[in-house]
Amino acid sequence: LHLLGLVGYHPQLFACVGCRSPLEPEVSYMSAADGGVLCPRCGHDWAGAATLSVNALKVLRFLQTRDWETCRLLRLNPSTRAEIERVMNSYITYHL
Image (cartoon, rainbow, N blue to C red; front, side):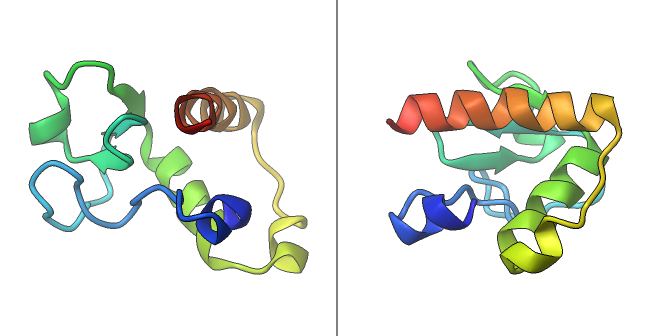
Protein backbone atom coordinates (compact mmCIF):
# COMPACT_ATOMS: atom_id res chain seq x y z
CA LEU A 1 0.00 0.00 0.00
CA HIS A 2 2.87 2.37 0.70
CA LEU A 3 4.33 1.75 -2.75
CA LEU A 4 0.95 2.42 -4.35
CA GLY A 5 0.85 5.70 -2.45
CA LEU A 6 4.31 6.68 -3.64
CA VAL A 7 3.23 6.33 -7.27
CA GLY A 8 -0.13 8.05 -6.70
CA TYR A 9 -2.42 5.02 -6.71
CA HIS A 10 -3.22 4.45 -3.05
CA PRO A 11 -6.82 3.34 -2.56
CA GLN A 12 -9.25 5.64 -0.75
CA LEU A 13 -10.04 3.77 2.48
CA PHE A 14 -11.59 6.44 4.67
CA ALA A 15 -14.37 8.01 2.58
CA CYS A 16 -16.76 6.49 0.07
CA VAL A 17 -15.54 7.02 -3.50
CA GLY A 18 -19.19 7.24 -4.58
CA CYS A 19 -20.78 9.77 -2.22
CA ARG A 20 -17.68 10.97 -0.28
CA SER A 21 -19.25 10.21 3.11
CA PRO A 22 -16.97 8.86 5.86
CA LEU A 23 -16.89 5.06 5.92
CA GLU A 24 -18.43 3.44 8.98
CA PRO A 25 -17.30 0.07 10.43
CA GLU A 26 -19.65 -2.07 8.32
CA VAL A 27 -19.39 -4.34 5.30
CA SER A 28 -18.34 -2.19 2.35
CA TYR A 29 -17.26 -2.66 -1.26
CA MET A 30 -13.92 -2.19 -3.03
CA SER A 31 -13.97 -0.74 -6.54
CA ALA A 32 -10.62 -0.91 -8.31
CA ALA A 33 -11.95 1.17 -11.20
CA ASP A 34 -13.06 3.96 -8.86
CA GLY A 35 -9.98 3.93 -6.68
CA GLY A 36 -11.20 2.70 -3.34
CA VAL A 37 -13.99 1.73 -1.01
CA LEU A 38 -17.71 2.34 -1.43
CA CYS A 39 -20.19 2.58 1.43
CA PRO A 40 -22.94 -0.10 1.55
CA ARG A 41 -25.50 2.29 0.07
CA CYS A 42 -23.36 3.15 -2.97
CA GLY A 43 -21.60 -0.18 -3.42
CA HIS A 44 -24.57 -2.52 -3.25
CA ASP A 45 -25.36 -2.22 -6.97
CA TRP A 46 -22.02 -0.81 -8.17
CA ALA A 47 -20.73 -2.77 -11.17
CA GLY A 48 -17.44 -4.52 -10.49
CA ALA A 49 -17.33 -3.77 -6.76
CA ALA A 50 -16.14 -6.58 -4.48
CA THR A 51 -17.45 -7.09 -0.95
CA LEU A 52 -15.03 -5.96 1.75
CA SER A 53 -15.45 -7.07 5.36
CA VAL A 54 -15.01 -4.78 8.34
CA ASN A 55 -11.85 -6.63 9.39
CA ALA A 56 -10.31 -6.41 5.92
CA LEU A 57 -10.99 -2.67 5.77
CA LYS A 58 -9.42 -2.18 9.21
CA VAL A 59 -6.32 -4.12 8.16
CA LEU A 60 -5.98 -2.18 4.89
CA ARG A 61 -6.25 1.10 6.81
CA PHE A 62 -3.64 -0.13 9.28
CA LEU A 63 -1.27 -1.13 6.47
CA GLN A 64 -1.75 2.19 4.69
CA THR A 65 -1.06 4.34 7.75
CA ARG A 66 1.69 2.48 9.60
CA ASP A 67 5.39 2.03 8.88
CA TRP A 68 6.83 -1.21 7.51
CA GLU A 69 8.35 -2.29 10.83
CA THR A 70 4.93 -2.15 12.49
CA CYS A 71 3.09 -3.74 9.55
CA ARG A 72 5.38 -6.73 9.34
CA LEU A 73 4.45 -7.74 12.89
CA LEU A 74 0.77 -8.04 12.00
CA ARG A 75 -0.66 -11.58 12.05
CA LEU A 76 -3.85 -12.24 10.12
CA ASN A 77 -6.28 -15.12 10.12
CA PRO A 78 -6.33 -17.02 6.81
CA SER A 79 -9.75 -15.77 5.67
CA THR A 80 -8.89 -12.09 6.20
CA ARG A 81 -5.53 -12.58 4.48
CA ALA A 82 -7.22 -14.25 1.50
CA GLU A 83 -9.81 -11.48 1.25
CA ILE A 84 -7.15 -8.76 1.30
CA GLU A 85 -5.07 -10.60 -1.28
CA ARG A 86 -8.13 -10.95 -3.52
CA VAL A 87 -9.21 -7.30 -3.43
CA MET A 88 -5.67 -5.90 -3.64
CA ASN A 89 -4.75 -8.24 -6.50
CA SER A 90 -7.77 -6.92 -8.37
CA TYR A 91 -6.90 -3.31 -7.48
CA ILE A 92 -3.23 -3.60 -8.51
CA THR A 93 -4.05 -5.51 -11.70
CA TYR A 94 -6.55 -2.83 -12.71
CA HIS A 95 -4.10 0.01 -12.14
CA LEU A 96 -1.14 -1.65 -13.84
